[in-house]
Length: 584
Image (cartoon, rainbow, N blue to C red; front, side, top):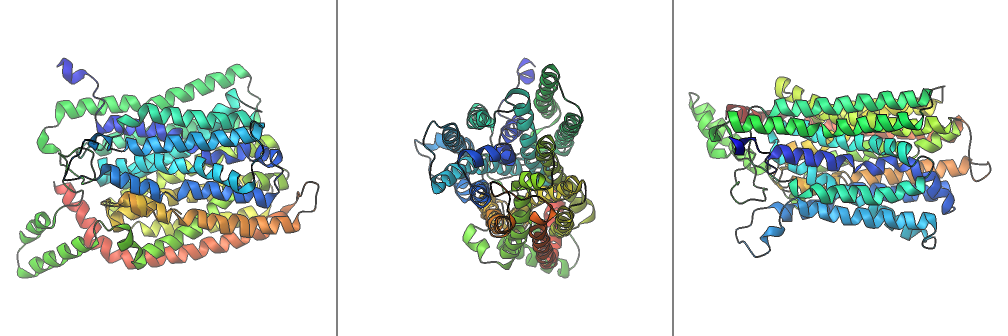
């Protein structure tokens, strides 16, 4: 009994908690607005140059093909074990991310404070790329491992991981306001140290466990409740800070309580682990994934064709047998595509273009939210609140997109690509609100765009897994994210999920470059006439956001076409897979 009560650090629940904590420290790219003005003034950049640097932030944070390939290499089972086999597992991906994070942010900090001479713009872009690129390694290691461990609820676990990444941005800003307020250059140094330290501390706990139990959903809901509680707490604190001036002691107390909330997932993990130990027998656990760091777990998340055909052959009549054989062949053809196979499909490019439009315009909004606020006369405190609240809206979208789409898919059979079309249409409305310039428009517009932007990040990886498979999911969804990741999981399968979703992720920085530099930066510099190349008034960004509203609507139409094309696939393969999993 004593051994049963002892905390087992090698469980999927502890792995989930470790991933959550790493995600919370990896949201630095969403706090660009905190130090962007200091970066601009210290390096004598104009708005177009600053936007160019921010685009390399977006490229680094979204082009995670390398992290997906590394994840696949480090976790795929190999038939021949070598003396270096101990160097396998998600921790290899986290270690790489820690090195990139420290190098990028430290060099940026050294440039801002004058420790080194001001680098040329291409070199500063490289520093920013390295710093932001670390996020793809942290993200791939946590998201894909989560999908491996909770494949039946891919949308929920992706929403949790992506949600805590968004919350991490708001939490980091709270730390800045409490400890380093007024010293954005010091904040850059902290970004070099904190994520690196946390990742190195917990990376060995992030492991793939090929088991599934009936209580998974219950405990995942508990993690979700914690995430929502933290989001509500942060939102209240941010709003109060915008109304009242908190003394230092009050900031310290609120920040310590935030740390307490962030530690609470450990209690959920301990409870879940105890229940698994006392209530579950081995017959209630099924091995799920071919992408594991231990050789014993080899069964795919997808049910085998032979297993499922048995269930269909139990039905009377030759017609159902023929249907089973046809669907089994279709399932075999569709699951676990690699990156080259997925790129040759129309579904990949439809998802890529949809993410190009949605993620690009969303990133352009967050990258320029400080400048938009300044042009409209918002005070500095309000602009900082907008940056913080963006992380909250981003979280709500990331969490809600995965959680709600999971519920609707399981209960009503609605296909996930439909949710991308709906959120892109809503995002288009948000851009129009920002362009309108009415009093308080930036608050309303940032809520709409932030939530819809977060939804893209939650839906894209799951759809990648469902359509292309989990094997190279990391690479594929990061390639599209060079647009966005939940849809990847469903359309392309679990086998290559890491590779595929990182490939899809490439659409995000491409869209960001077009919207931020070629649209917003170009138009702003043309209309700016004030001191220091500044612009004041609604006209500074109106045309830019009307164009981005049109871009988001085009993405909505493309996503709807993907929904039409994949309806039959979802009914014949994805929903059947979920039905099989519930039977087992």
